[in-house]
Length: 623
Ligand SMILES: *[C@@H]1O[C@H](CO)[C@@H](O)[C@H](O)[C@H]1NC(C)=O
Ligand SMILES: *[C@@H]1O[C@H](CO)[C@@H](O)[C@H](O)[C@H]1NC(C)=O
Ligand SMILES: *[C@@H]1O[C@H](CO)[C@@H](O)[C@H](O)[C@H]1NC(C)=O
Ligand SMILES: *[C@@H]1O[C@H](CO)[C@@H](O)[C@H](O)[C@H]1NC(C)=O
Ligand SMILES: *[C@@H]1O[C@H](CO)[C@@H](O)[C@H](O)[C@H]1NC(C)=O
Image (cartoon, rainbow, N blue to C red; front, side):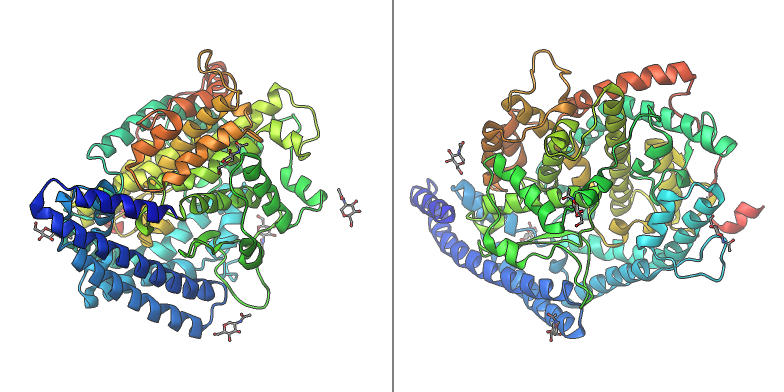
């Protein structure tokens, strides 16, 4: 096992440590780490079993068991952490030993005293509860008041083209969640910062950024955002023009776009408005969901199709126990948590996905995404426990999506028989446009989610400005505005799950940039991309069956988190920085088309200030 190899390496370098003061401590630390790693694996395995049992069978008994073992684990981790930070580990000579101590030295919320830790968990739980039980009334049937976010509100936002109805649902959802979460959220910020300080960070924003191991990381993200802005502005201008054709003066010619018209309750993914905004509306739009159904795909077959792709790259096949223990479709006999997830049970053997698959293109993509996580787990399973993770959290999210870029290319879909019609440049452009609505429009949103929270945790944004600041950022980065005036009695960020559940979000931005960077490298290795001539249709590259591409990816996956992320990036791409040029090249044909089209239409590019106001109180709005 590789962990034993590292173990030996550590030991040797301990013995040869140059500093006699620290030499003895390093040898002791070495033994301490070996025991800690074994116990951590056992504890994690035990906890994950109870978590799985609960999430796949929501009974009180299973919940109690999960909470009990969760408390046991928290106690174990805190005691271990206290021992870890008592070592003078920064002076150790062995890199991998030092790095394990570094990773163990950050405990997170568990550093709080037990009472406060419980309180923080309770506050987050309360907000999640408000969020998941919130119901709103239907637009024109005021008696019908049982609409939940999933699936009702999501469906209305994506399919309704009635502006009044969309506005009603958009507002009602925010009214149902925001005000109730506001005071809780303020308390959460205090406690979360307190926990961060016990980990020696100035506040939670510094704690969240710590995993990127780069003091200039924020600036680098800003830089990437700036590189992508011209493409974003062209897509934004084109969509606003199309929306004006559909909805008239509700959408201004030069202002931000009202946020309720973009097909999604958060306006974070604009894919659902593709049907009436396509570049070539009269050209056969391949309905891949229908194709999957017509071809009698089952959930297992979709998973096998995904596995086949990974195997064609010489990546690892799923172990037998994966097929026996995973859940692919919702079972009818017991309620379960249906959010798609992938599981590493920390014993080097047991890996599973939990999916509630429907036969749709979305779930086809989700399956590839989750299996990407499993591939990562399988490749680093023999590393010491703290190295079993993505090079950073964005890497982990990027693997499955990277595969999807090839899988969803028209070339591959034709190869596996999901597209049977001829492809011409118009079909191609429609496809690229849909990917753009999904991926490019998401970038500023994922960025501003953290811009908002960073300033809140640091105290730069005061509680009395939380909501107005949110709208300031939404306008500045996304070019969207609220359909009505807002005040600080509203609390619109709470309408997003990751905000109230305290889930960092930057990983999705990073994953989006990285997947294209990986894609470009792998396409080059697969002989489908020429780095000299550039712009050689990255969007039509399909790495299926390329061992060269797969073996390169394998090497990066096998590094896990054993080195800082630039080392992992370099191992695959030769670059040490995240870089937006790959995503820009991928979308180059769309970018060119949009520039021409916007010029032809006389569409305004960019946006003037919103006419909407945001005040302290609702009363001020009335006067
Ligand atoms: C669900 O969990 C309960 C324990 O709370 C157990 O008795 C039952 O057998 C489980 N059901 C299934 C279908 O696994
Ligand atoms: C409500 O609106 C929907 C579509 O907008 C329509 O199908 C339905 O009949 C309406 N219901 C009532 C009670 O007006
Ligand atoms: C935080 O810093 C103090 C003082 O330097 C130190 O004693 C303590 O161990 C540190 N805590 C952590 C979690 O690193
Ligand atoms: C799918 O199943 C139906 C009904 O069993 C059958 O008639 C049809 O030929 C099948 N289609 C394919 C592509 O296998
Ligand atoms: C597949 O990967 C293994 C390592 O996991 C390697 O030894 C083997 O050479 C690779 N096969 C090909 C055909 O590249």
